[in-house]
Image (cartoon, rainbow, N blue to C red; front, side, top):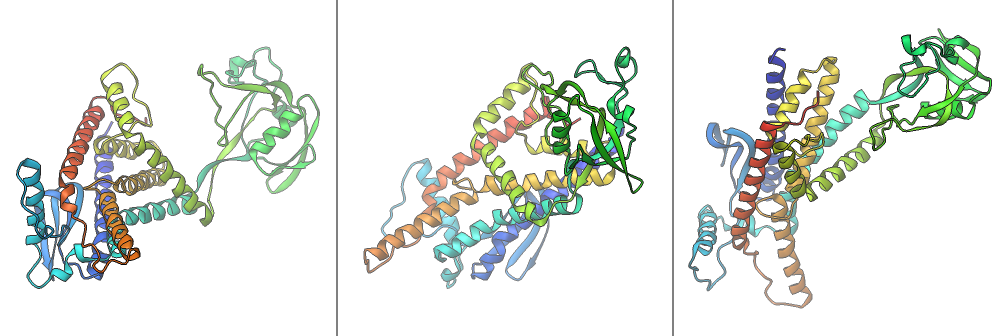
Length: 440
C-alpha cells in the first residue's frame, strides 16, 4: 500500500490546523488593536522563528513547531500594587519576574495602551475572540457538509432483493442459505431494483422507518404496494412473511445487543434492502448540529482525566483501544492519513476530512474556555473577577474603584497547568504510537 496518501493526509491536516490557529490568534489580535492595545507579535507555531516580517508595530511570523500560536499583547500583567515588596522564594520570584517582564514591554507614555488598562467588557471581547473564531470555523465547515453534501439517509428505493425468507436474522437470504426456504415476498411480487415505494397497504409512504412499520403491521396479510418505475406508478400485491426482524436505527443499521448479536422483534419480511442516499440539510440544521458537537466535546473535556487513564490502560494492556478514545495530535494526524487512504470517492474523503477539522475547532473552542491560566478561559475569569470587584465598589459608593487585578499572582498556577497539559500530551502521544485508534 502506498504511503503517499497518508503523507498527503498529514500535510493537509497540518495546513488546516495552522489556518485554524492563525484565525484563532486573529480573533484576539483584531479586537485588541481596535481597542488600542499594542500587539508586538503575531506568531503561528512555537520554537525557532522560520520567517517573520514587521509591519507597523507588529512582527508577523511562522515558527518551527506547528502546534499552536500566540499574539503578544503588551501589558497583560499590571505593575505590582503600591507598597508591594518583592517576596522571597521560588514562586514569589516567579511571580515578580513575570510581572517585571510584562511591565518592561510597555513603552514610556503608552501605559494607556496596556492590556491591563482595558475595561472588563473589552478584555472579555479580546480573550473570547480567539475561541469564538474556532467556533465560527467549525460552524462554516459544518454548513458546507450539511447543506452542500448532506447526511447519510435511507431511502424507500429498492437497492437489492433477497432470494428467500431467511431462516434466521444472520442468514444472507441468498444462495445456499435459501435451500428449503420460501421465495422472498418482494421478488415473488415482482419488485425490481430501482423501484421507489410510494404507497403500502393504501398508506402513502414518507420514509423508510414508516415503511418498516407498515410492513411489520401487515405480516401475513396481502397488501397493495405501489412503486414508481421509470416514472410510472406500478401496483403490486405482496404478502409480508411473519418473521423475527432485526431492530435497525435511523440509518438502517442493525442494533446489536450486549452479547453482540442483533436485537430482534416480531414483524414482517418483504425482502429488499433500501438504497443509501445523502440528504442535504436545511440551514436551520447547522447550529443545532454544532451545538450537539460542542456539548459532546465539553462532556469529553469534563471527563478528560478518566479518558486519559483509559487511553493509557488500553495502550499498555491487552484491552482494545476504543474508537472514541481521546487522542493527541499524533493520533489525529494518523487518522487524517487514513482518511486520505480510504477507498472512497475523493468528495467523500474531503467531507470526512472537513468533519475532522470541524471537530478539532470545536475542541479548540471548548478546551480554551477551561477557566485556568494560561488558557483563554483563565483570562476570562480574571476579567470577570476584576469587573465584579469594580461593580461591588460602585454599588457601595466607593470614591476610588479597584485597579486591575494582579493576574501575575496566578503565574504559578499557569506553570502547573502547563506542566499537567504537557504530561497529558506526552501520555497520549505514547498511547497513539503504541496502540493508535484506527478507522480502517
